Amino acid sequence: MNIISITNKKFIDMKLINKTTNTILAQNLEIADTPAKRMKGLLGKKSLQTGEGLHIIPCNSIHSFFMKFKFDAVFIDKKNIILDLAEKIPPGRVKFCFGAYSVVELPEGTIAITKTRPGNEISFLK
Image (cartoon, rainbow, N blue to C red):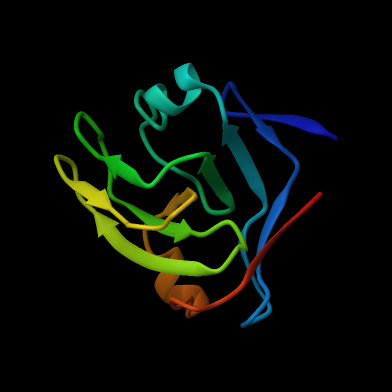
């Protein structure tokens, strides 16, 4: 697995593809798969650049307290089917999705640009 550095943070060279629409949601995902990484999430970042994202696993709820920017969130089940979407989440909000196994946080506007919808199937590619 290739690791690259973007703005002093390590991202895994992994793509997130919407298989239903055949579009790329993210080209560089950071994986938050430990309690410490999940707790930190995007806190401390000033923004998410186009192509970046954070995959929080396991996770079925997120918050944007103390965040400095809006972002989109994709809630996914264990079969990589999108259950719910949250667009342009502003600071100070909470979002929960019953049945979600993980969440991908993406730059604001990614969901609209890629025409991603609940029920779409996604795939993580190295």
